[in-house]
Image (cartoon, rainbow, N blue to C red; front, top):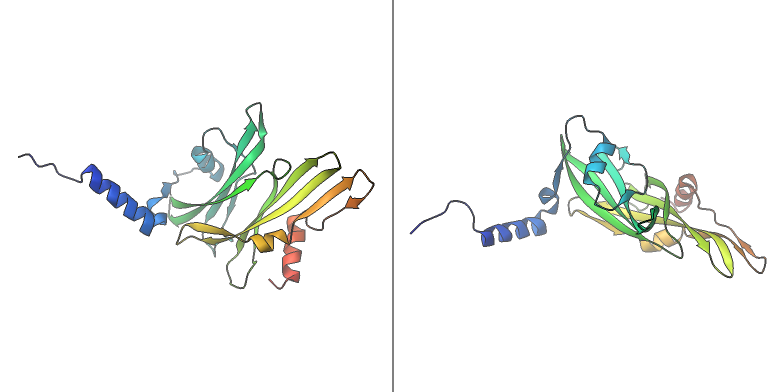
Amino acid sequence: MNHQSGFSKRELVVLITLCLLSFPSLCQQISRKTGESASQFVGRLKPAGTSLAHPVVETNNLLQNTPTIIALYGYPADKADTLSFSKIMGHIYTQTQAGSYHDTPFGPIDEDGGFPEVLSVFYANANKDKTNELIVLAKYPQRHHDYSGNFYETHIYTINTKKNQTTYLAKLSEKFWGCDCEYTDGRKETTSYKTAKEVKAGLKKMGY
């Protein structure tokens, strides 16, 4: 009877499954090549058929002095228009050791009466702990029979790298929704949250 060394296919499937369930961050390690810029790193990981929806952000300040790269990949609504996205998916690449990162996804940021356009990617404290939250400010052009203008929506996420997950803070995010719109009956509507500076100021007024 011949014996083969190593694991059977079934054993490998079990091991991979246990890894993903118990230690997802360890299972999704991504190598960054020596001398590779953040843009090159993100470009190499970019899903097929997508385009960057915002310039790559590289910072040490999002997760308490941990080197982090933030990328947003847009899925074009039309092959002929690769800059209009029906959906945007985000990824937080966090350094675990020199040259090695793990991937924490966030989103989706979907269309809302219009396709999302990311204006700013930043971070601020948006709850009572000491860790910053990730914030994405997006604009949605509106062209309807009774009004036109732009929706402005703020997407706020808490990050748990140990569990390799983000949580969308829906109720807080909705407080920063607004419309710069003009209606056919002459009414006008404005919003106070069209820039990162304005959103940060709003969070401070709330005590964060």
